[in-house]
Image (spheres, rainbow, N blue to C red):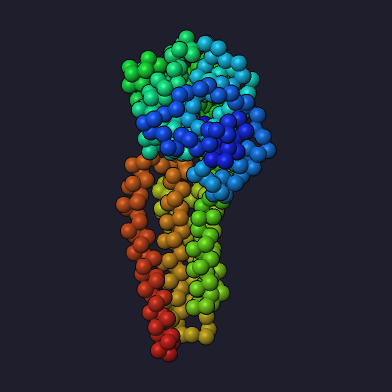
Length: 356
């Protein structure tokens, strides 16, 4: 579960005076006041989500760290904790419709729960500080706070209880399961299971695509004039494969590492381009083989590199797993991509010398 609001206050529930103020406070934190929110997402909220998915003001899509009340909570009402990423915050408050509760939002610098837990911003220190700063012990009689399950890597539960007096309770992975969870305060195995459905993977693709769009366009234009339209098409195809096709096909590609999955997919996509150049009847055999080799080397390497970016979007891999992938496969990606580029440069030189 995740939650947030952004700079321009796309969150209809946040006062305008709250705009971005939390980013600057570190030592001089304004006094906490309980803000009221609703569980209803407006059209503006949903449009803000859409824009954030496309990278528009993504890092400004934040909600002020604070204590919020939803409905008419009293001293016995549950307290949920979340990150200050707007989509996380909205997912939580919309899932809590009809439940009177408090939501304590931590300052995670606009990062969602799971990533913030990994980076340490959704951590023990921030949680203990926010509990104290909000005066939570004077607002509720109980001493239990409900955290997202994916925040566990950043939280030392016993340390939180020792320093704040509040017992940490880890809820379900998905905010939508909270209503059912509150009946027993126990997360079932299904509630603890992380689902990474096709839709979950698809919504991640616009951000990666937007980041790669301009460099891809530049490379495609250059290749168009140096090597022709097929080479330009190969560049565009490679990026689309790494940013869109890879997450779509992720569960179906063999191997466990994202890097090797990307290499396999990139190799498959490169084959039609390689065969096309290999069958070119205008030039002789060995230049055609070298041209085909360029595609078979460069396209898988770039696809694998783009695929590696998705390790930060899923719980498929752990932090140590990501590090292992980087150290194990990135040098290999660089080597084969560099080899392909060197061969293409040599082909260009041979062409200028009219050797081929």
